[in-house]
Every structure is written in C-alpha cells, then in structure tokens.
Length: 500
Image 1 (cartoon, rainbow, N blue to C red):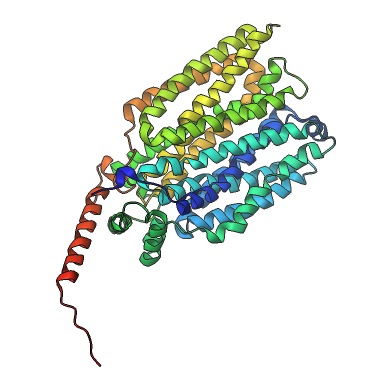
Image 2 (cartoon, one colour):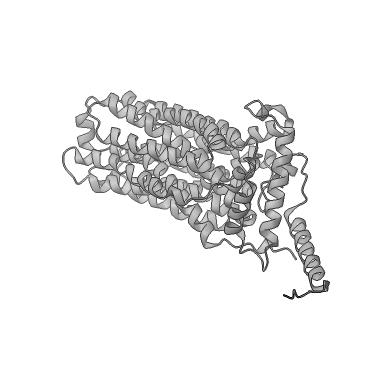
C-alpha cells in the first residue's frame, strides 16, 4: 500500500533544510541591508556627494556580482557538489562583509558589494536545488520554499537592524549593519561539515551506497517499512543512469531537445516575471517612497522594518499550502492581485502624494504593504521551487543558472534606472508594473504545467521525456511485494542447526 500521500518530514530532513536555509538568510540580509544603509544620514554625509547614479551603482553592482556567482555555482554545484558550493559561498560572503563594513571610499564599498553579490548568487542557485533534492516529493514545495522564507527573514532582519542603528551616531550607524552580513556566513561555515551531500548528486557520482544511506536518514520514516526510501532510491538511480546514457555533459544539452528548451523557457519566464512584478524596486527604494509621501526622521526606517515583517508572515502561509494549492494556480492568481494592488498604489500616490491628506497617504502605505504580502503568497517561494523541480538532473544547475541570471539582469536594470525614473516621472512609474503583472498572470495561465506532488524524476513525463522507472507509488508497492515474497521464502526454508 503506498504511503506517498501521507508523507511526513522527519527531524533530520528539517534540520538539513533549515541549516542550508541559513545561507538564504545571508542573501536576505545582504540584499536588504542597502535599503536602510543608504537612508542613514551619516552614510550619505560620509560618501558625499551621494547622487542618484551613485545610489543606483551601489545597489545594482551587488547584482552584477551575483551574475558571476550564479555561473560559477552552475559549474561548482555539479563538479564539487551542492554542499561544498554552499561552503565556498559562505567563505566569500565573510570577506565581502568585512570589505563593506571597512569601506573608506565609495569604490571600496562597491567592490565589497560586487564580492557579496558573487556569494549571494552562488547561494541563490544552490540552496533551492539542494533543498528540492533532499525533500520528500509531497512536501517539496515546503522544503524548497524555505529559501524564500529565510530570504524574507533576512530582509526583515536587515530593516530592523537599520532602524535600530538610525539612533546611533557616527560611522557605526552604517558600518555595523554592513558587518552583520558576516554572522550567517560564519554560522554556515562552522556547521557545513554536518550537512549531508545531496543524494541525487551522490548517485550522479556513482556513490550509490552513500546515497542510499542519506536517503534512509532523510526519508526512512515514511511508511511502516523501508519500501518508500528503497523505492525512491531505485527510481532516482535508474532515471539518473538513463539520463547520463542519453545526454551530453555541457551547456549545449539545455538546448538540444524540445523538452529542455521548454524547461528553460518556463524557468526564464517565472524568474523574469518575478522581477517584473516590481517587488525589488519597492524593497530597495521603499524608504524613498515613504519620504515622497511626507515621512521624515526615523519614520522611513521604522516603516521599512514593519514592511519587512509582512512578507515572511505571508510567505509562511504560502509554504503551508503550496503543496496543496499547486504552483500554477497560485502564480496566476497572485499576478492578478498584484496588478490590482499596484494600480491602487499608483492612483493614491498620484492623487494624494503631494497633498496633506494623511488618511490617504496612510492607505497608500498600507497598499505598499499589501503588495509584499500578495507577492509572498505566490511568487516569492514558487519561483525558487518551480525552476529546479522542472529541470532534469543533467541540466538542473545549468538551467537554473541561466534562469536566475535573467532575473538578476532585470534586477540590475531596475536598480539603476528606478532612482532616475522616480525623480523624472514619479508615481507614473508604477504603470509599468501594472502591465507586467497582468501579462505574467496570462502567460502562466496559458503555458505553465502543474508539478505538485510528483517526484523530480516523474516530472520529466510532463515534458514528454522518456522515464524508465514507473511512478513512485507503483515502485514502492513492487518493493514491498518483493520484500514480502522474500520473507515468505525465508520462513518456508528449513533451518538446520549446526552441530559441533
């Protein structure tokens, strides 16, 4: 009898996934800390003149470093493994945090941001892949989605650290928040030894016995016998061996077959629409938005701190339901609600941004908060879940890298042009995101297949690939039947006692 529908996550799997997600916390802090740092008075005084173009460079060069980090991790995750890649990223992140916190001129700060972006780019591709590969199929959305959850916690932490430091004086006001980036990186470095290798990576390296031991520790509690983890091991091993026999190693494999080209298209689309939602424009420049609505003093950083809590809370709801809601439905519905919310923000900003109507301005801020809540109910976790799960083992790292790079490039463009756009056209800039969110909802509804509940190997069937192993439930039943037959044979065999 199959136990797949009743899969549980044991404490070992939780521990591995949560520890890996500490690297995601690093991503959130590194990405989010800049929004409060650039709002600190002592920071802008120290780096005077801090123009709009310099502000855009400080924010966007971080993502430029991430591009190189993503491509490095695409090689490293396959060659060295997911575990070692996370360790390398953490080491680089410590160096980056030290450079930024010790900066004495803007060039040094930008170099530190580039190095930090390199580390975060590595984390951003490797952690979702790792967690998706250690998760039981029915709970993969929850486990893989922890990356986005901890990114959100990191953003929130960065915002509150920035708010607290706004009461400090001197350079501490901005140097300490930049130094905080080192803490999660050091935690990852100290604990990485205890993290297991991905079982699928071990199988690809033909380290079968190690893979079986890891799978047993991860999923040995599912069911009343060992049929589930043995069936899972069998399905992984046979499918990975088959893929290795029919695929080529290299970047060209991504484009070789129609199914892989479709995977890449969907992966790029979900990453592109994530950025075209406008969420990072709001995240990075929210303090400027609050100032444009008349907020002053400590209020912009306080609002940024409250804003940072909204996303993680909403994301927890998404993680709880994502494996029952499904990926497709959640994405297109989220897109529609983000379109509506952005239209309300634009309308209220245009009508009351320059007025003295504090109630209307309060509603504008409320809808900005609603925007991050809606985004976190859908896109925030799912774009990290969907990309690695639609890729085969042969192209998972490389395909994920190409999709994430598209995300990062759009992020760079927005970070560079948004300060200029807000200064030139103001609230009308929101109209771009109204159009892109609506387009994203339509495209997802028409093109995207549903993947919830299937193993990573079974998803290949959705794209028309040949799958050499039956679905996991049938494999589990076969393994259980074989075990039962083996026990019956042993019971029927006479036992002869040896005499001395």
